[in-house]
Image 1 (cartoon, rainbow, N blue to C red):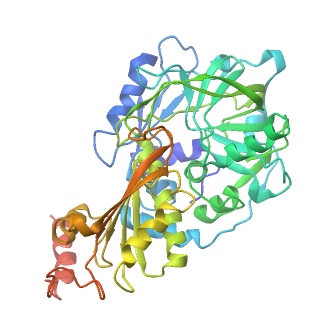
Image 2 (cartoon, rainbow, N blue to C red):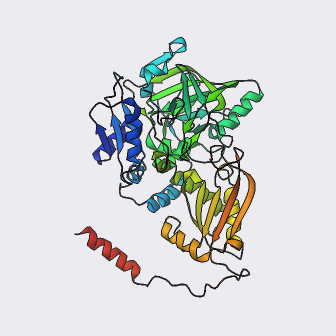
Image 3 (cartoon, rainbow, N blue to C red):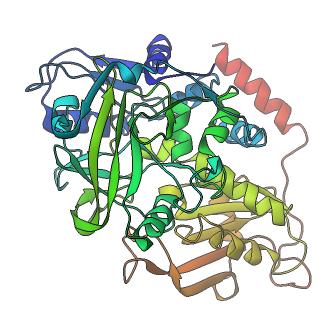
Length: 474
């Protein structure tokens, strides 16, 4: 089932027992973020949370942890809630191959119901804002989809980027945005500022669940997120035209904010409790001037808690990081079997691959670091054999403990690029990266004494199915 807006997905979550309505009154701080933080600690079947009685707010509707479990992630893709992580990644990869699916343009978008413009713009009036971590420098919009166009090619649909970037509220009509250099919005802003121009943007909040997945996905520069959303949804993504910028935005959003990133203007943004499990410091970041807000009547404010993993963000950017890396690597190295890039948005990656010859696995690891996503992330790569499941950490640890000779199998490459938010970077944006080759050496690399490996008995798979059936029938 494809969802056209956030509300229809929340209805499904509730029907599946994956939405918990908190009916008593709570404090905006610390209760809202603490509840979402707690959801990440109660297991992989954690529900989404819905609050509508928040002290100090007369009319708040807040959804948290919407993607914050593998059950919810499966339902977002229209899969049964019990679908395993490995099967979700495999289905994601299968649907990836259906790209592109053209979007469907619709009129009468629900977010057109209410408008603020010019001097009347007031984010605090529209949104029930609250801090996510007690050390945050302010209120953040952290689950928005930001739409921008390439100033050098504004009519190219594929170069119209839809990405998730953190946005700090610094005034009723001002935001600070962090455009990470490897991301498309940074390229668009650089092109605009080279002309001494502002960069028009649209910011959408409360989006249908697949759009939120796609907005955090590393994709080719000229590949449309809307066309990828259609492939992953199994149905065209509904879009509408934003009235001020003319940009294409999700039809079902709760809130659409339009304005510009003001050219060459910077203001201190941060600190912020990040996906790395550490606070990022305050930095001078570009400023967004808001010129128009369009919003649904009684909008639902969707936010995302992030901090020490695992939190909702780790489910949200897990498969959508694994699959692009898998597809890029397999295009050049068909021997690559699977990629697990679930950890801290792919700062650590596990790859299973067959080998053509000795040293081959290390070459695959180096290529992972030089993919578009790898340039800013992928700081550590573990390579395992094709019969080792990279999503099965006991198998990965067995491979590392039995096959790695540190003198020959650990490669450290200094002074490579990484996202500035990586806590171990020194200076910010620069790090050493590491490859751990935990594959079995093949000729002409004839090191070690691996002889004949022990394999599962031929009847084991049949007995796995049999035991699972017996357990389920108890």
